[in-house]
Amino acid sequence: MKIYINGNDISKEHLTKWKRKRITKTFRILGHKEPKVKDTDVLVKKLTELKMRYSYNEMYDKLESKLRLGGKVMRAFVTFSGDRRKICKTDFHVDGITAEEFLSGFDNLMLKQLLENDLVNLSACPDHYVLKPYGKNGQEVIEFTGNSPFPVQFFIVYGDETGLKTPRDSSYHYQSAGVARMKDGTVIGGVRHQFKNTDKGVEVRASVEFPALCPTRLIKAHQMHLACEFSYWLQWIKDQKNNNGRTSLK
Image 1 (spheres, helix red, strand yellow):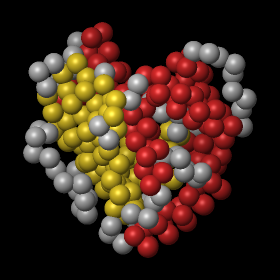
Image 2 (image 1 turned 135 degrees about the vertical axis):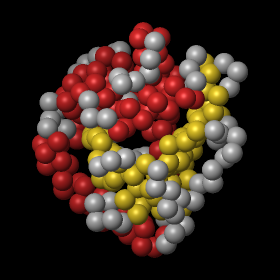
Image 3 (image 1 turned 45 degrees about the vertical axis):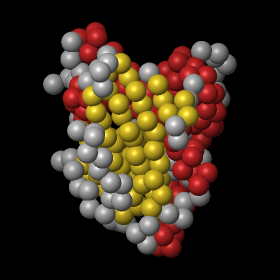
């Protein structure tokens, strides 16, 4: 797997270093001492096990005061940004899986309520606290975006591209796109993740839109967030294909 941010190759060591910092922060936010574990994959597993012990209501209550602050900040960004956006992008090249297989597996993870999907989605990035289906083609997300000091709760409706600023690239034959709204309906941005086949596998361009007044450092930090979560999802879906001959649990 190759990961690129602004055309620069992101090494596994760089990503692991970033991930461990976020793991440390997440243990602290949840009020638990970080285990003394050298293996990052083992540490991710322990953090996911901790998150899974919380019900949805317990997790929300744990973050509620921070979510209120995060919501106020995000609404202010939206108010003063108007319809202007900053776009955050990270690219991936992966051998041994097709765009169709990845899209099928990705839709399964985002839109189906399964225990295994919860495990995968909470493991994908330390900054994930809730990722669960919402409505017919929607998903609720509670996460820390970029290096924000506050989490944000938002709802993505896939297939609704209203107001998205990221243009569709015709060279990518598949996409997963949707608008992101807060609980009160405030549009805060959206996603346009695009996929295409290569000679050996798949190329993925993950794109997230933020209000234009969001600090550039947040956008840059969220590129690493995308690198973390999509590399995990891509590898998991590829492993499912290799182990089971399929990419989803249909």
